Length: 429
Image (cartoon, rainbow, N blue to C red; front, top):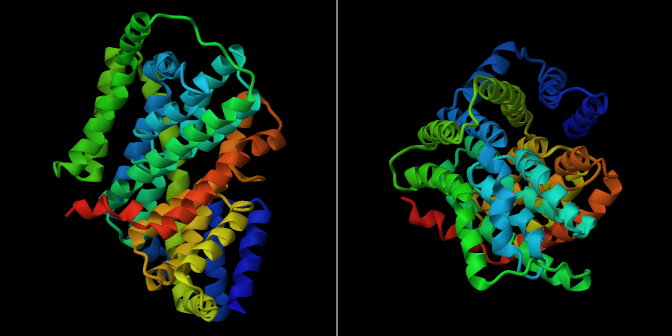
């Protein structure tokens, strides 16, 4: 009965248009009143306080602020012209700028929507002007934009690490290899897909001239590598915690923007306001999620659902496929953060019992949340691209479908070869 009531309350509140955080909190309060007849005020206050005062969460607003600043920077706008000479002669040509641009921005962003928006506003007009297939351009942006959640620093991995008490540093390390491999898979698909598209002729240049253009464009790429070295290098060298590294990276971003004369009080004000809005929304969701987990524990829901799934006697691979299908269905109706916080208390014990660890499952969960980003009708990346292009949602969703299947296949490869995720985090003490 509590399970049915939880589902009815949750979808009823979400369907009525209530905020996600308030919906999660309402479900928790309703269940405790109905099935435990207990006062919830003290429990609610203590749960939210314990969740939101976690030291690891300090990094969250700092990474978001850095992404907001980068979104308004000059060197982000120059990204396309810097990448263009490096990819113009590859099969697929300038379509690869979507993937490479999103990969670079993801290295210093942490947000899928921010990555998609920042890169899309630069690359899509250029690709259309040069005659590239619009559908493939939209699809590659939607697929590659999801890398903002996987490649560190990742907002989702920070929240997952806090809620599951997993090392954020190890989660960041675990996201590097699959993020880069997934980007390579996207580029491989674009190379093959280009064989069936009208050929776009690259500008005719000599080898020496091409290298001169490439070298001239490197200064626009340098800030990304500087920030990556400051952010990731300081963490993995043991010089700084994720929160300390994030604060230094924000300062470095401001210095770079000041050097390029794109830093102003108006820019800082807009970035801070954008950060405040995002952090407030995430704080409400995270606090409500912590309270929902506590209430579900009181009701014994995670144990009951886990027992039913355990009774199915699924092998580890079958369990992964089952969870993948469940998350794909949930992703059609729920935003990725909601899926994360709602399902953790139930699925983490199942995954650990199947022989996978929490670091591996963190990467699995990020990728299925990425799938939700390009799954209609609530895929966030689809809405971002629609806002940039005014294109029909149905066309954008169809364009991203190949990248959806690439990620599904990648998840199955991860399940068969978990060492793909595990080897780099094991190098961190």
